[in-house]
Every structure is written in C-alpha cells, then in structure tokens.
Image (cartoon, rainbow, N blue to C red):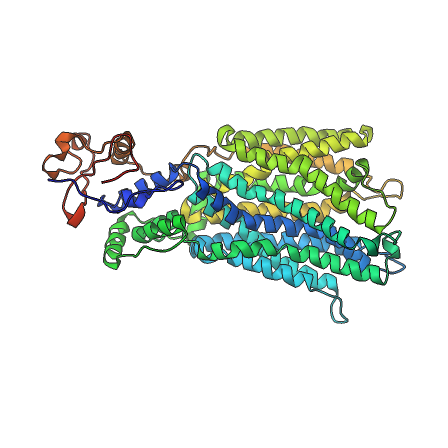
Length: 605
C-alpha cells in the first residue's frame, strides 16, 4: 500500500503545525497531548517576540499610568491648591487617596478577571481590560474642578475603574503568554511581558521631562510652587493632562491584536474539549489571519469522543474544591503570600525617594522649571540604574537558573538590605542610601517581583489557572495598599521640620521581616523550569504510546519497514510493548503510515 500524501506542510519558525502533524491519530486525547507537546518544543522565533510585545503593551500602559500620577500630583497641587494654606502642595490625604485608588481597583480586577477568564475563556475577556484602561486614562486627563464635585473625587473614581482594568491585565496576559509559549523559553517570555513595566516607568518620566521642556518659558521665571499664577497655572494644568493622556496611546496599537486573538489551544482543548477548533485557532494565531474552516461533522464526532476525558468545568464550586485540597492550597498559599510580602516592601521603598533625589543633586530649586525637571530626571536615573537592569536580567536567566532560586535568593538579599537600612539608618550617609536603594531595586526585579508574576501562570491546571493567578496577584496588591495607607503615615510619626521621617528606620526593620517571611513562603512554591504546564498541574496522564511516538517522530521514523507491510498502523513491535495501535488516516481516508524523512522531522509526505 502506498504512502499517504499530506497536502499541508507543518510549521513555521516559531510554532510547528502540531495539530496538522497529528491529524492521522484517531484518539482525540492522544492528538491533544501530542499537539501540546509540539507547542512546548517550538524553537524561539519572531513569533514569540510578537506575542511578548502584544501582551506586554498592557503592562507598559499599566506602569506608565501608575508612575505618571506620582509626577502629576505635584502639578495638581500647583493648579488646585494654590492658596495661603497649602501653597501649591496637595494635602497628604488627597495625595495618598489618588495613588491608592488604582491599587484598590486592581484587587477587584485581578480576582474578577482571573475567574471570568477561566469560566468564559481567555479570548472573551482579553482586550476588555485594555479598553477600560484606555477610556479611563482619557477621562482622567479631562477631569476638572466644579462646585458639585472636587477634582480629587473624580480622579479617585476613574483611577479605581482604571485599576480594575490594570488588575485584569495581570492574570490574562500572564496566562495567555504561558499557554502559548514553548517550555524551554516560557519563563523568559513571560518575564519579558512583565519587564515592560520598567519601560513604562521610564516612558512616564521621559514624557514628564519633555512636557516640562515644552513649557519652559512659562516656568523658569517662577521661583517656587507657591508663586505659580496666571500663565504658569494654565501651563501646568495642560502639562499634567498631557502626561496622563499619553499613557493611553500605546494601548491603541495592541487593542486590535488583543480583540482578534484566538482562544489559547490549551483552554480550547482542556475546557471546551474542541480539538478541531483548537487546530484552527492555533493556525490563525500563528499566521495572524483566518484561512481554515472547521468541519462540523468531524468537530461533533471528536467532541463526543472527548467526553470520556472531560475534567470538571471551572465553576465557583470546582475552584473552591480544587484549592481546598491540601497540596493545591499550599501552592496557592505560597504564590499569594510571597506576592503579598513582596509588595508590602516594594511599594514602601518609595518612601525614601526624596532623600535619594537630594543625594544625587536633583533637589535644586532655583525656579519651578528646575524643580519639575530635576524630579523627572532623578526618577529616570533611579529607574535606569536599578529597576530596568533587574527586569531584563530575569528575562535572560530565569529559564537557566530557575524561578525558585531567583525568588528565594532575591528575598534573602533584600532581607539583608532592609536590615542594614533599618538597624544602621542613622549611621548611613546619603551615598550609602543611594547604593542600597539601587541594589534593592535591582534585586526586587531580578528576584521576587518578576518570579511571583511568572509562577502562578504555570503551576495550576488550565481550568483554574487564571483564577489562581488572579488570587495571588490580588493578595499582592492588598500588600501594596497596606504599604501606602498604613506605613507611609507611620514613618512621619513625631515629624519635625529638621526630621520629617523619624520612624523610617523602624518601617525598614518591619520590611526586613516581610522579606524573610517571603523567603519562607517561597519554599512552598514548586520549581517550574523546563517543565510542561500539564506536568506542573499534576494532571498529566502521559502514556507509553505518546513517549514512543515522540521518540520515533523526533528520531526521523515512525514505523519500521515490517510495520508498514499491510498497513498495520504502528506495527507489532509497538503492540508488544502494550502500546495501542493507532489508526493512520491517509488520503481518501485509507489506512497507511507516515514516512518522515530521516533527520527532517518538519517535512511530511
């Protein structure tokens, strides 16, 4: 019997046509497992870069919006608190409320979008969160004072809503990237998505610097924030609106790709049980267009065959049942509380920024232009010195060193740094503080800040993966809120004009304890380096047939010469090992075998 011919060749530079390779296998569950194995083996290529950019744009926008408000509140104070009492400085309570609003909204967004992505699907939810961010960013830039409502109240409202979108981006982007990425490069690709935060922070400071330069003529004749009036106030009012509004522009470029992204093959396989649709979605996502059709008859047949393999649906009851199991609950506890302890200190570290800017010489106050310019420039230096190198060090090493060593090692080093800051604060010079701050920023990002984002997207099963990530991220953002609401006022207890932060050393000591606790909870999280998502979830049922087929497939031959005689499927040799005989579909539906050229596994026919 002649060899069957296949019209479609498999693969491209990033993803091989795994579903096309395995269409000859009758058992849909075997086709699913082998197709996912092929996705996991895909070599790194341009396709992965595009995936990281499209998903990472959301994090760029998130970080820009969160960081830009730190610079914008200075300008808001000049515009709306220009009186004898406040003298161009926003009250502390209003400042804190505006900054905390986004983190508070993010808690709800992370949990809600995480759950809905498991129930409704990744595709249906992806893009919704970005539309929320874009629209609320524009709305913030158009806010103003009125007799009915204060500008602070309006900003808080829109930033809470924006926070919901920002929070939703965490589980969606992490899980979608992890489910499309190959095993060998998965950690680096997910880390690259998260590293876009550093670029977003840098862009916010650069935009502020550009806007300040544009309005230099209106600022340089004003000695300080309390003296700004007339044209100066009008210029500053335009400046903060431009800085905020620019944050929504990058999102427009990614919105189309997010709204048109197909469902991840793993979700379509494991939750929808639709093998045929997963095949079409995979090809559509690879090539960026639809050109494949689904055979409804075969689709119905395959879905009926998959019924015997079905896992529970992702409902509230199933999620509670899954995470109430001891081993699963321990994993969730480890990921969630590691993130919680991290964010307590990560957001609290910013308390020392004014001192550091003074150390670097960026506290010069000749005029309003110098004040705003030096603030933006100082932030650029701090970001480039510590945060961005740390992010990208994780990207390039996480798949070699592993998530767990980086996370535990980062927590350990941060424990030492905060101990030095806490117990030796009074003996430290400004140069010492600058060095310790840069080191802390580096090891936050080449450490737990990146790995706590990666791991929850890998270690849970598909049906509850997004919920697990959302719960972990939500607890982390709760830590951020606590740091800003409780610890920020604590450092100013008993403040005087000579010593505005008398309790900062005590807060640093508390942060050292949090870093140590984060190191302990990290021990509960399994290592996920070079391991498939199915193996990490603990629900892999890999049979001997799959192992045999993969070895033959990658070795360059599927069946021996004796196996090909009479069209006997995989032959007696495989049946002797207890491996089920596969039905090989050739052209016209006749039985046959696939003959793959030795050493050329990507060529068929």
